[in-house]
Length: 426
Image (cartoon, rainbow, N blue to C red; front, side, top):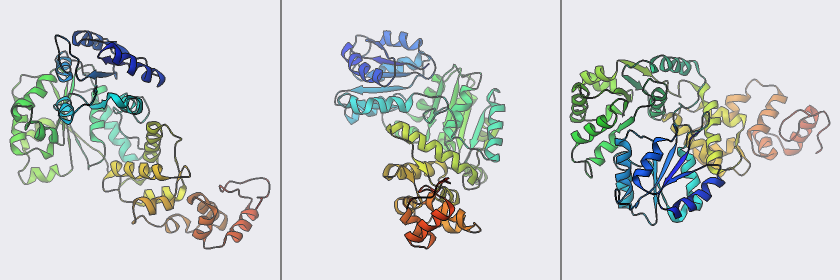
Protein backbone atom coordinates (compact mmCIF):
# COMPACT_ATOMS: atom_id res chain seq x y z
CA UNK A 1 0.00 0.00 0.00
CA UNK A 2 1.31 3.47 -0.93
CA UNK A 3 2.75 5.60 1.87
CA UNK A 4 3.60 9.27 2.39
CA UNK A 5 7.08 10.33 3.53
CA UNK A 6 7.44 13.79 5.12
CA UNK A 7 10.97 15.17 4.94
CA UNK A 8 11.34 18.20 7.22
CA UNK A 9 11.45 19.27 10.82
CA UNK A 10 9.58 17.49 13.64
CA UNK A 11 7.06 20.33 13.70
CA UNK A 12 6.32 19.78 10.01
CA UNK A 13 5.62 16.10 10.62
CA UNK A 14 3.34 16.91 13.52
CA UNK A 15 1.36 19.53 11.57
CA UNK A 16 1.07 17.59 8.31
CA UNK A 17 0.70 14.23 10.05
CA UNK A 18 -2.45 15.28 11.89
CA UNK A 19 -4.10 16.35 8.62
CA UNK A 20 -2.99 13.26 6.70
CA UNK A 21 -4.07 10.82 9.40
CA UNK A 22 -7.51 12.44 9.43
CA UNK A 23 -7.59 11.77 5.68
CA UNK A 24 -6.89 8.07 6.22
CA UNK A 25 -3.13 8.10 5.51
CA UNK A 26 -0.26 6.75 7.61
CA UNK A 27 2.73 9.08 7.07
CA UNK A 28 6.35 8.44 8.01
CA UNK A 29 9.03 11.08 8.57
CA UNK A 30 12.69 11.98 8.14
CA UNK A 31 14.50 15.12 9.29
CA UNK A 32 17.60 15.03 7.05
CA UNK A 33 18.38 14.36 3.41
CA UNK A 34 20.29 11.13 4.09
CA UNK A 35 17.53 9.83 6.36
CA UNK A 36 14.95 10.82 3.75
CA UNK A 37 16.75 8.84 1.04
CA UNK A 38 17.01 5.77 3.27
CA UNK A 39 13.31 6.00 4.14
CA UNK A 40 12.40 6.57 0.49
CA UNK A 41 14.17 3.33 -0.49
CA UNK A 42 11.72 1.43 1.71
CA UNK A 43 8.59 3.04 0.27
CA UNK A 44 6.32 0.79 -1.82
CA UNK A 45 5.41 1.56 -5.41
CA UNK A 46 3.04 4.50 -5.81
CA UNK A 47 4.18 6.31 -2.65
CA UNK A 48 4.56 10.07 -2.33
CA UNK A 49 7.15 12.34 -0.71
CA UNK A 50 6.47 15.73 0.94
CA UNK A 51 9.69 17.75 1.20
CA UNK A 52 10.25 21.05 2.99
CA UNK A 53 11.84 23.45 0.52
CA UNK A 54 14.31 24.54 3.22
CA UNK A 55 15.43 21.23 4.68
CA UNK A 56 18.47 22.98 6.12
CA UNK A 57 20.66 20.06 7.21
CA UNK A 58 24.43 19.89 6.69
CA UNK A 59 24.11 17.78 3.52
CA UNK A 60 21.24 19.59 1.85
CA UNK A 61 20.04 23.17 2.14
CA UNK A 62 17.01 23.03 -0.15
CA UNK A 63 14.53 20.54 -1.60
CA UNK A 64 15.80 20.68 -5.22
CA UNK A 65 19.14 19.21 -4.05
CA UNK A 66 17.29 16.49 -2.17
CA UNK A 67 15.18 15.57 -5.21
CA UNK A 68 18.25 15.39 -7.44
CA UNK A 69 19.86 13.06 -4.88
CA UNK A 70 16.74 10.89 -4.91
CA UNK A 71 16.85 10.54 -8.69
CA UNK A 72 20.55 9.69 -8.64
CA UNK A 73 19.68 6.92 -6.19
CA UNK A 74 17.06 5.66 -8.68
CA UNK A 75 14.19 6.69 -6.38
CA UNK A 76 11.38 7.99 -8.54
CA UNK A 77 8.50 8.60 -6.14
CA UNK A 78 6.77 11.93 -6.93
CA UNK A 79 7.69 14.84 -4.64
CA UNK A 80 5.48 17.70 -3.45
CA UNK A 81 7.46 20.63 -2.05
CA UNK A 82 6.06 22.71 0.80
CA UNK A 83 7.20 25.71 2.81
CA UNK A 84 6.15 28.94 4.46
CA UNK A 85 5.57 31.75 1.94
CA UNK A 86 7.21 30.01 -1.00
CA UNK A 87 8.05 32.56 -3.68
CA UNK A 88 7.55 32.05 -7.40
CA UNK A 89 11.33 31.67 -7.74
CA UNK A 90 11.32 28.92 -5.10
CA UNK A 91 8.51 27.12 -6.89
CA UNK A 92 10.23 27.34 -10.28
CA UNK A 93 13.48 26.02 -8.84
CA UNK A 94 11.65 23.13 -7.21
CA UNK A 95 9.58 22.13 -10.23
CA UNK A 96 11.90 22.77 -13.19
CA UNK A 97 13.63 19.75 -14.64
CA UNK A 98 10.89 17.29 -13.59
CA UNK A 99 11.90 17.57 -9.97
CA UNK A 100 8.82 18.32 -7.84
CA UNK A 101 5.38 17.60 -9.31
CA UNK A 102 3.58 20.23 -7.22
CA UNK A 103 3.89 22.56 -4.25
CA UNK A 104 1.77 23.68 -1.31
CA UNK A 105 2.12 26.66 1.01
CA UNK A 106 2.49 25.49 4.60
CA UNK A 107 0.05 28.12 5.85
CA UNK A 108 -2.69 26.53 3.71
CA UNK A 109 -2.08 22.91 4.79
CA UNK A 110 -5.54 22.62 6.31
CA UNK A 111 -7.22 23.55 3.01
CA UNK A 112 -4.90 22.17 0.34
CA UNK A 113 -2.67 19.40 1.69
CA UNK A 114 -5.14 16.51 1.39
CA UNK A 115 -6.31 17.68 -2.03
CA UNK A 116 -2.76 17.76 -3.36
CA UNK A 117 -1.79 14.44 -1.78
CA UNK A 118 -4.90 12.62 -3.03
CA UNK A 119 -4.36 14.00 -6.50
CA UNK A 120 -1.05 12.18 -6.89
CA UNK A 121 -1.48 9.02 -4.83
CA UNK A 122 -2.56 6.24 -7.21
CA UNK A 123 -5.75 4.37 -6.36
CA UNK A 124 -6.29 1.24 -8.40
CA UNK A 125 -9.47 1.35 -10.45
CA UNK A 126 -10.31 4.95 -9.55
CA UNK A 127 -9.82 8.34 -11.10
CA UNK A 128 -6.57 9.17 -9.32
CA UNK A 129 -4.70 6.23 -10.79
CA UNK A 130 -2.57 8.06 -13.35
CA UNK A 131 -1.05 4.79 -14.57
CA UNK A 132 -4.26 3.60 -16.28
CA UNK A 133 -5.79 4.91 -19.50
CA UNK A 134 -9.18 6.59 -19.28
CA UNK A 135 -11.86 3.84 -19.32
CA UNK A 136 -13.59 3.34 -22.64
CA UNK A 137 -15.71 0.46 -23.93
CA UNK A 138 -15.73 0.76 -27.71
CA UNK A 139 -14.37 -1.94 -30.02
CA UNK A 140 -11.64 0.31 -31.44
CA UNK A 141 -10.36 1.19 -27.98
CA UNK A 142 -10.51 -2.44 -26.83
CA UNK A 143 -8.37 -3.43 -29.82
CA UNK A 144 -5.85 -0.70 -28.99
CA UNK A 145 -5.64 -1.93 -25.38
CA UNK A 146 -5.13 -5.51 -26.56
CA UNK A 147 -2.20 -4.27 -28.63
CA UNK A 148 -0.76 -2.34 -25.66
CA UNK A 149 -0.99 -5.37 -23.40
CA UNK A 150 0.82 -7.52 -25.96
CA UNK A 151 3.73 -5.13 -26.45
CA UNK A 152 4.09 -4.07 -22.80
CA UNK A 153 6.18 -7.14 -21.93
CA UNK A 154 8.37 -6.70 -24.98
CA UNK A 155 11.40 -4.44 -24.77
CA UNK A 156 10.72 -2.76 -28.10
CA UNK A 157 10.41 1.00 -28.49
CA UNK A 158 6.83 2.20 -28.91
CA UNK A 159 5.19 5.26 -30.44
CA UNK A 160 1.69 6.11 -29.23
CA UNK A 161 -0.12 8.18 -31.85
CA UNK A 162 -3.41 9.98 -31.35
CA UNK A 163 -5.21 13.29 -31.36
CA UNK A 164 -4.80 15.86 -28.60
CA UNK A 165 -6.68 15.24 -25.37
CA UNK A 166 -6.66 11.42 -25.37
CA UNK A 167 -4.33 11.05 -22.37
CA UNK A 168 -1.42 9.55 -24.29
CA UNK A 169 0.97 9.91 -21.33
CA UNK A 170 -1.32 7.64 -19.31
CA UNK A 171 -0.85 4.93 -21.96
CA UNK A 172 2.93 5.35 -21.67
CA UNK A 173 2.77 4.93 -17.88
CA UNK A 174 0.49 1.92 -18.38
CA UNK A 175 3.15 0.26 -20.52
CA UNK A 176 5.85 1.09 -17.96
CA UNK A 177 4.17 -0.58 -14.98
CA UNK A 178 3.44 -3.70 -17.06
CA UNK A 179 6.89 -3.92 -18.59
CA UNK A 180 9.96 -5.81 -17.41
CA UNK A 181 11.34 -2.41 -16.36
CA UNK A 182 8.52 -1.54 -13.96
CA UNK A 183 10.92 -1.28 -11.01
CA UNK A 184 13.31 0.94 -12.97
CA UNK A 185 13.21 4.73 -13.54
CA UNK A 186 10.61 6.43 -15.74
CA UNK A 187 11.84 9.80 -17.02
CA UNK A 188 9.70 12.10 -19.16
CA UNK A 189 11.05 14.52 -21.74
CA UNK A 190 8.32 17.07 -22.44
CA UNK A 191 8.62 19.58 -25.26
CA UNK A 192 7.44 22.67 -23.31
CA UNK A 193 9.82 21.79 -20.45
CA UNK A 194 12.61 21.28 -22.95
CA UNK A 195 12.07 24.83 -24.23
CA UNK A 196 11.64 26.64 -20.89
CA UNK A 197 14.21 24.75 -18.85
CA UNK A 198 16.99 25.44 -21.32
CA UNK A 199 16.47 29.15 -20.63
CA UNK A 200 16.95 28.78 -16.87
CA UNK A 201 18.80 26.13 -14.90
CA UNK A 202 19.72 23.61 -17.60
CA UNK A 203 22.88 24.83 -19.36
CA UNK A 204 21.93 23.67 -22.87
CA UNK A 205 19.41 21.50 -24.71
CA UNK A 206 21.96 18.74 -25.27
CA UNK A 207 22.77 18.62 -21.55
CA UNK A 208 19.09 18.49 -20.66
CA UNK A 209 18.37 15.55 -22.96
CA UNK A 210 21.55 13.76 -21.92
CA UNK A 211 20.59 14.21 -18.26
CA UNK A 212 17.19 12.62 -18.91
CA UNK A 213 18.78 9.58 -20.56
CA UNK A 214 21.31 9.25 -17.74
CA UNK A 215 18.59 9.31 -15.08
CA UNK A 216 16.53 6.76 -17.01
CA UNK A 217 19.41 4.34 -17.60
CA UNK A 218 18.01 0.84 -17.13
CA UNK A 219 14.45 2.10 -17.34
CA UNK A 220 12.19 3.96 -19.73
CA UNK A 221 12.31 7.38 -21.38
CA UNK A 222 8.96 8.85 -22.37
CA UNK A 223 9.24 11.55 -25.04
CA UNK A 224 6.00 13.52 -24.94
CA UNK A 225 4.76 15.16 -28.13
CA UNK A 226 7.83 14.19 -30.08
CA UNK A 227 6.28 15.73 -33.19
CA UNK A 228 6.66 19.20 -31.57
CA UNK A 229 10.46 19.08 -31.34
CA UNK A 230 12.39 21.14 -33.85
CA UNK A 231 14.92 19.43 -36.12
CA UNK A 232 17.76 20.29 -33.74
CA UNK A 233 15.91 18.81 -30.79
CA UNK A 234 15.21 15.70 -32.84
CA UNK A 235 18.87 15.35 -33.75
CA UNK A 236 19.90 15.66 -30.07
CA UNK A 237 17.48 12.89 -29.09
CA UNK A 238 18.71 10.80 -31.99
CA UNK A 239 22.34 11.29 -30.90
CA UNK A 240 21.62 10.00 -27.38
CA UNK A 241 19.72 6.98 -28.71
CA UNK A 242 22.50 6.06 -31.13
CA UNK A 243 25.34 6.70 -28.66
CA UNK A 244 24.90 3.23 -27.16
CA UNK A 245 25.67 4.56 -23.66
CA UNK A 246 22.26 3.94 -22.19
CA UNK A 247 20.08 0.91 -21.64
CA UNK A 248 16.69 2.57 -22.11
CA UNK A 249 13.39 1.72 -23.69
CA UNK A 250 11.78 4.61 -25.61
CA UNK A 251 8.08 5.35 -25.47
CA UNK A 252 7.15 8.37 -27.59
CA UNK A 253 3.78 10.08 -27.89
CA UNK A 254 2.79 12.01 -30.98
CA UNK A 255 -0.12 13.74 -32.65
CA UNK A 256 -1.45 12.28 -35.88
CA UNK A 257 0.17 15.27 -37.66
CA UNK A 258 3.50 13.43 -37.38
CA UNK A 259 2.70 11.55 -40.60
CA UNK A 260 2.50 14.83 -42.50
CA UNK A 261 5.69 16.09 -40.85
CA UNK A 262 7.56 13.02 -42.05
CA UNK A 263 6.23 13.54 -45.56
CA UNK A 264 7.27 17.21 -45.73
CA UNK A 265 10.67 16.60 -44.12
CA UNK A 266 10.08 18.47 -40.85
CA UNK A 267 10.40 15.28 -38.82
CA UNK A 268 13.49 13.07 -38.91
CA UNK A 269 12.53 9.82 -40.61
CA UNK A 270 15.41 7.97 -38.91
CA UNK A 271 14.17 9.11 -35.48
CA UNK A 272 10.73 7.79 -36.36
CA UNK A 273 12.18 4.35 -37.09
CA UNK A 274 14.27 4.40 -33.88
CA UNK A 275 11.40 5.37 -31.59
CA UNK A 276 8.64 3.43 -33.32
CA UNK A 277 9.65 -0.20 -33.53
CA UNK A 278 5.93 -0.64 -33.04
CA UNK A 279 3.12 1.93 -33.10
CA UNK A 280 -0.24 2.09 -31.36
CA UNK A 281 -3.01 4.32 -32.70
CA UNK A 282 -5.43 5.58 -30.04
CA UNK A 283 -8.94 6.02 -31.53
CA UNK A 284 -10.46 9.52 -31.26
CA UNK A 285 -13.64 10.15 -29.31
CA UNK A 286 -15.58 11.68 -32.22
CA UNK A 287 -15.49 8.36 -34.09
CA UNK A 288 -16.48 6.34 -31.03
CA UNK A 289 -19.53 7.88 -29.30
CA UNK A 290 -20.05 4.65 -27.34
CA UNK A 291 -17.01 5.67 -25.26
CA UNK A 292 -18.67 8.85 -23.99
CA UNK A 293 -20.78 7.28 -21.23
CA UNK A 294 -17.97 5.42 -19.39
CA UNK A 295 -15.78 8.50 -19.62
CA UNK A 296 -18.51 10.76 -18.23
CA UNK A 297 -19.03 8.44 -15.26
CA UNK A 298 -15.29 8.27 -14.66
CA UNK A 299 -14.81 12.04 -14.72
CA UNK A 300 -17.80 12.66 -12.45
CA UNK A 301 -16.48 10.11 -9.96
CA UNK A 302 -13.10 11.84 -10.09
CA UNK A 303 -14.72 15.23 -9.49
CA UNK A 304 -16.76 13.93 -6.55
CA UNK A 305 -13.71 12.34 -4.91
CA UNK A 306 -11.53 15.37 -5.43
CA UNK A 307 -14.07 17.77 -3.94
CA UNK A 308 -15.50 15.38 -1.33
CA UNK A 309 -19.10 15.63 -2.49
CA UNK A 310 -21.81 13.26 -3.79
CA UNK A 311 -21.33 12.01 -7.32
CA UNK A 312 -23.33 13.99 -9.88
CA UNK A 313 -25.69 12.05 -12.16
CA UNK A 314 -26.41 12.64 -15.87
CA UNK A 315 -29.92 12.60 -17.28
CA UNK A 316 -30.54 10.46 -20.40
CA UNK A 317 -31.18 13.53 -22.52
CA UNK A 318 -27.93 15.17 -21.45
CA UNK A 319 -26.05 11.94 -22.13
CA UNK A 320 -27.56 11.85 -25.60
CA UNK A 321 -26.34 15.38 -26.23
CA UNK A 322 -22.86 14.49 -25.03
CA UNK A 323 -22.77 11.49 -27.39
CA UNK A 324 -23.87 13.66 -30.30
CA UNK A 325 -21.10 16.25 -29.90
CA UNK A 326 -17.92 15.92 -31.98
CA UNK A 327 -15.38 16.52 -29.15
CA UNK A 328 -12.50 18.00 -31.17
CA UNK A 329 -10.31 17.95 -28.03
CA UNK A 330 -11.44 14.45 -27.07
CA UNK A 331 -11.45 13.26 -23.45
CA UNK A 332 -9.84 16.46 -22.16
CA UNK A 333 -12.71 18.56 -23.49
CA UNK A 334 -15.33 16.08 -22.26
CA UNK A 335 -13.78 16.13 -18.80
CA UNK A 336 -13.81 19.93 -18.65
CA UNK A 337 -17.43 20.00 -19.82
CA UNK A 338 -18.92 17.55 -17.34
CA UNK A 339 -16.91 18.83 -14.37
CA UNK A 340 -17.97 22.39 -15.14
CA UNK A 341 -21.60 21.27 -15.25
CA UNK A 342 -21.19 19.29 -12.03
CA UNK A 343 -19.72 22.34 -10.32
CA UNK A 344 -22.68 24.59 -11.13
CA UNK A 345 -25.50 22.03 -10.84
CA UNK A 346 -27.85 22.71 -7.91
CA UNK A 347 -29.82 19.47 -8.33
CA UNK A 348 -27.05 16.87 -8.29
CA UNK A 349 -27.81 16.09 -11.93
CA UNK A 350 -26.42 17.26 -15.25
CA UNK A 351 -29.36 18.10 -17.47
CA UNK A 352 -30.01 19.37 -20.96
CA UNK A 353 -30.34 22.92 -19.65
CA UNK A 354 -26.95 22.66 -17.90
CA UNK A 355 -25.26 21.78 -21.17
CA UNK A 356 -27.05 24.43 -23.19
CA UNK A 357 -26.69 27.25 -20.67
CA UNK A 358 -23.34 26.58 -19.04
CA UNK A 359 -21.03 25.04 -21.60
CA UNK A 360 -21.74 24.95 -25.31
CA UNK A 361 -24.43 26.36 -27.54
CA UNK A 362 -23.93 23.96 -30.45
CA UNK A 363 -25.08 20.74 -28.77
CA UNK A 364 -27.93 19.15 -30.69
CA UNK A 365 -31.40 19.43 -29.18
CA UNK A 366 -32.29 16.24 -27.28
CA UNK A 367 -35.75 15.97 -28.80
CA UNK A 368 -34.32 15.39 -32.27
CA UNK A 369 -31.84 12.88 -30.91
CA UNK A 370 -33.87 10.67 -28.64
CA UNK A 371 -37.62 11.35 -28.71
CA UNK A 372 -38.28 10.60 -32.35
CA UNK A 373 -40.12 7.30 -32.74
CA UNK A 374 -40.92 6.88 -29.05
CA UNK A 375 -44.44 6.21 -27.80
CA UNK A 376 -46.12 8.75 -25.51
CA UNK A 377 -45.13 7.10 -22.24
CA UNK A 378 -41.49 6.78 -23.31
CA UNK A 379 -41.42 10.43 -24.40
CA UNK A 380 -42.75 11.49 -21.01
CA UNK A 381 -40.19 9.36 -19.15
CA UNK A 382 -37.41 10.73 -21.35
CA UNK A 383 -38.48 14.35 -20.81
CA UNK A 384 -38.78 13.96 -17.01
CA UNK A 385 -35.34 12.40 -16.74
CA UNK A 386 -33.76 14.91 -19.10
CA UNK A 387 -34.83 18.05 -17.26
CA UNK A 388 -34.34 19.38 -13.72
CA UNK A 389 -38.06 19.99 -12.97
CA UNK A 390 -41.48 18.75 -14.10
CA UNK A 391 -42.19 22.25 -15.40
CA UNK A 392 -39.17 22.00 -17.72
CA UNK A 393 -40.29 18.53 -18.81
CA UNK A 394 -43.71 19.91 -19.73
CA UNK A 395 -42.07 22.63 -21.83
CA UNK A 396 -39.92 20.06 -23.63
CA UNK A 397 -43.03 17.97 -24.36
CA UNK A 398 -45.00 21.00 -25.53
CA UNK A 399 -47.78 20.61 -22.93
CA UNK A 400 -48.90 22.44 -19.79
CA UNK A 401 -48.06 21.29 -16.26
CA UNK A 402 -51.58 20.02 -15.63
CA UNK A 403 -51.57 17.87 -18.76
CA UNK A 404 -48.22 16.38 -17.82
CA UNK A 405 -49.52 15.50 -14.34
CA UNK A 406 -52.58 13.86 -15.88
CA UNK A 407 -50.33 11.84 -18.20
CA UNK A 408 -48.15 10.81 -15.27
CA UNK A 409 -51.24 9.58 -13.45
CA UNK A 410 -52.38 7.72 -16.54
CA UNK A 411 -49.06 5.86 -16.89
CA UNK A 412 -48.40 5.55 -13.10
CA UNK A 413 -45.16 7.53 -13.18
CA UNK A 414 -43.57 9.28 -10.22
CA UNK A 415 -41.78 12.65 -10.35
CA UNK A 416 -38.55 10.93 -11.53
CA UNK A 417 -40.25 8.99 -14.34
CA UNK A 418 -40.23 5.65 -12.51
CA UNK A 419 -43.17 3.21 -12.57
CA UNK A 420 -45.15 3.00 -9.34
CA UNK A 421 -47.90 0.68 -8.24
CA UNK A 422 -50.03 3.45 -6.75
CA UNK A 423 -51.49 6.40 -8.52
CA UNK A 424 -49.35 9.50 -8.55
CA UNK A 425 -50.50 12.15 -6.08
CA UNK A 426 -50.73 15.44 -7.87
